[in-house]
Length: 162
Image 1 (cartoon, rainbow, N blue to C red):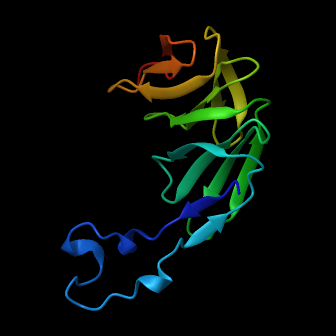
Image 2 (cartoon, rainbow, N blue to C red):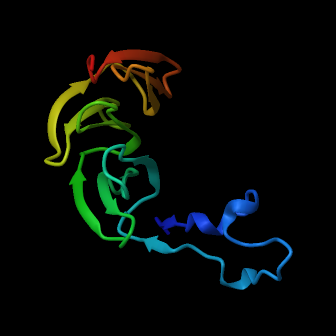
Image 3 (cartoon, one colour):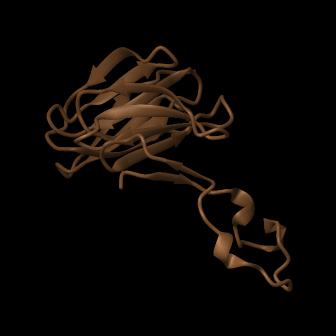
């Protein structure tokens, strides 16, 4: 269905601070997502919360979609959609700059650094020979490590020093 569902955190059942009392009768029939976001044309492969703008979520679509979409999670509105040219496999926000790094599959298997909110392409990082499945950044936020289907890890100076 290419559906992105947002749930209300208060519906969580973890602990007693979750918004309901376990001893009360709790009607589970109305439990469901707060929002259904249906604008992707393929499976949603990547998600990343923006660290500097509360309620802003970036999502990346698969091969038939190829877009990064930015959502206002309060209203469900799509704020922007950018065609990246290939499936989006992972998304990672910079800890220090208004930048976003995306990883991709066929045909380039690269990482792309974008300036937010203009989504101007700053730089491409190439070297993997298969889909880049996951990324994470170093504790200082400068280095990004990527893991790909080519069974390699690569380390990149994507975000630079703070």
